[in-house]
Length: 263
Length: 288
Image (cartoon, rainbow over all chains, first blue to last red; front, side, top):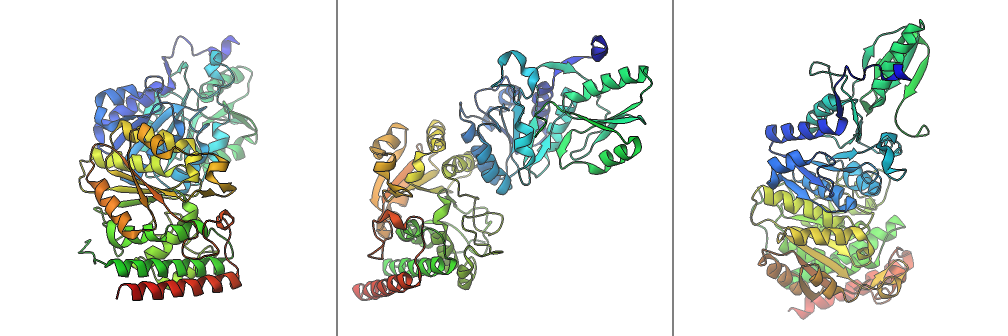
């Protein structure tokens, strides 16, 4: 068990959502058409940094997630790039049909941010441990689905989304997690990356699970098994080329995601 | 772009509304499915909007100074298609492709298919909040003299999303939103007051902070006047409660909720068209 956390103490710990907050602030500075809306969870989703810097470009929706995304659709229709944030359990949990109709079929570049996703929400209990968001979003037309592995990558993803014309869902986690990428780690929407090469087995991981995949690979190496870790920050569209070529090389595949296996 | 729009006389507008009603009957009969009562009842409102109220340019649907018309109750879209065709957005013959495979005129409006539609809708209750987003964007960009009109059904006011938006519009004092509620008192399963009572509807909007105007929604001049009045109010969102007759113009369809979600068959269509031809003749003679 200790081996699973072998990076602890060496790596900076920071919630993935924090990277969204700093990324959005930076996006707001760079691009005038970036706006924000939140459903009464501004600091929890780290949108407060943007809201404080650009109050005239921030809309406080109150506790109404259906309103949140549909207001986002209207903002996007007029040329804005709206980031709309809440917890993943409500956004896209509560408002899935509005996302489907007014953002996805309507093809408006709204950026849906679902924080506190996955089991790592822990003490908040089952209602808030959103495990179904990836299943809900991957099936929607036109929607890009992103799950960054750490706060540094979340910031990069946010900046990339701000200049991308497609509707997008990004899931974020609440708890502090190890920062395993740097400013120099490549990131592009739609691309998967081999974080650790190996020849015996491919571990295809996304979001917070990529760190755990890396830790597992280190442990396996001690047993003489060389695992390749493929990090997939964009789940849709899927970088099939990178994943399939890794699988062809190692001929064994394990997937790791913090979500329902069925989805 | 957006050159001088033609001004129509009231007689011309009433004639256009009747033509639109005839088109709705023909389109629905040909399609073999769709909603009849709502579009028929809304023909006067859409005529007023497309041929008098809206600042728009059919030859340049994305004109950046245009007024925005959001259709929230997407199932009444045949009335919008008919008005758009007669305004010059697309050929009138294309109306007969309604609901057909490959047609741009889907059973519920899809923005990405047909230039001039401002949103994709069908699932109810989300138009007002989209209008809020548009109005907020205009305010951020300091846009003046541009309005967001949003047509809603009365049955769709059952949806909570509408009232979330009503609160937001009031909070941000979105005087550039003009809501139009088609108060025809019917929904799919029956009379609104039996399915889920909406009254006191005026008091509800008033309590949510909206400026309420109540009109006869089948009176084109009243619709035009109400929109003019609404544009003069700047610090409050405005809702026009437009009382309409469902199925208006065809005697055997009027007031009958059974016509909410079904099209006329051939015989019914012939009968309806005959009535509407008589109505058109009366409009022409009355104004002489």
